[in-house]
Image 1 (cartoon, helix red, strand yellow):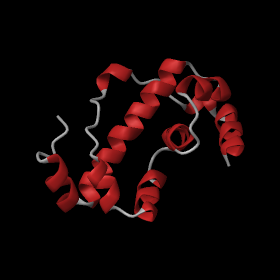
Image 2 (cartoon, rainbow, N blue to C red):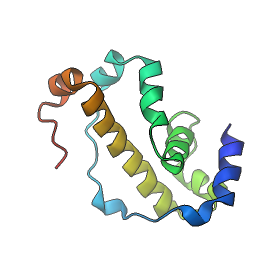
Image 3 (cartoon, rainbow, N blue to C red):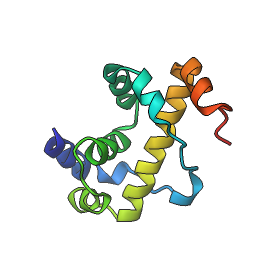
Image 4 (cartoon, rainbow, N blue to C red):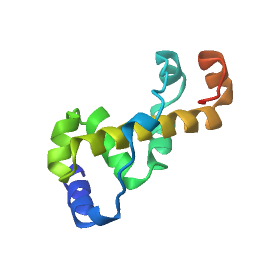
Length: 114
C-alpha cells in the first residue's frame, strides 16, 4: 500500500501545494481521546484527509517512517512533508471535535483551535 501511494504521489506531484509549517497550531492531543474512540472510527476520520496528508500521516504514524525518509521517498522537501503532517494532525483534531464533541469537550475543554 505504501509503495502504491508513493508511486501515485510521484506521478501526481504537480498537484500538491506547499503550505507554511508555521501557520498551523500544534494540536493538543490527549491519550484519553484515543482510548475512547475505536480504531475503525479513527481510520474513518483518517480516510477523510486529502490523499497527500493521509499518506504522509499513515507513513509516519502507522509505518514509523521518519519525516526525512518520507520526503526522500515522495521526492518532496522535508519542510513540505512536515507541514503536510502538521496540517493532517490539525485536520484530524478538528474532525474528532466535530464527530465526537462529548469526548473532545471533556478532554480538551475549549474546542476552539484559534
